Amino acid sequence: MPDNKPYLSTGEKLNEKRRVSKIKAQARRKPTDKQGKAYNYAPSHEVYIAEQLGAHLVPASGSKGVKGDVRWHGKLRVECKSTQKQSYAVNPTTFETLERDAVLAGENTVMSLHFLDEHGTPQSKLLVVNENVWLPILRRAVEAGWLS
Image (spheres, rainbow, N blue to C red):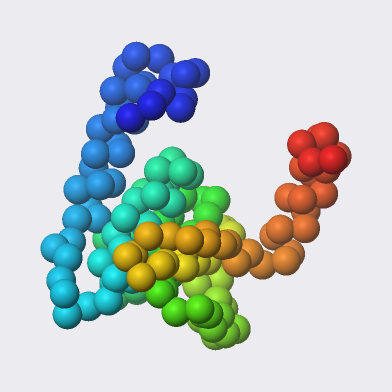
């Protein structure tokens, strides 16, 4: 694993390594031929997003009343979806359900969509974000000079 967080001390790096190992262990699921490639890919999708954000996986997300597959407490909830089809329908009710629960916790919502090829490898990775959340972030990024 490359050291993509050089600002961490040795102790913090060890804790980060343990956290990532725990995330990966939570997401293990035995692949099955009966399910599609998207079903088998889902745990690694959730781990990828959790690692990128420094967030954690929500155990049994959706089935225990807590919406969102990945959660960064007090900041963000992410629902991860993957498909081998050429399109994925995002309807208002799907996003509103996730958003309703997140707003109560003071969190923003994002939907991560990964489109897979016939081998189950992601070809496109997209995020669906509420415009009321995205526009202020984009404005701040431009003002800070991160985007030209």
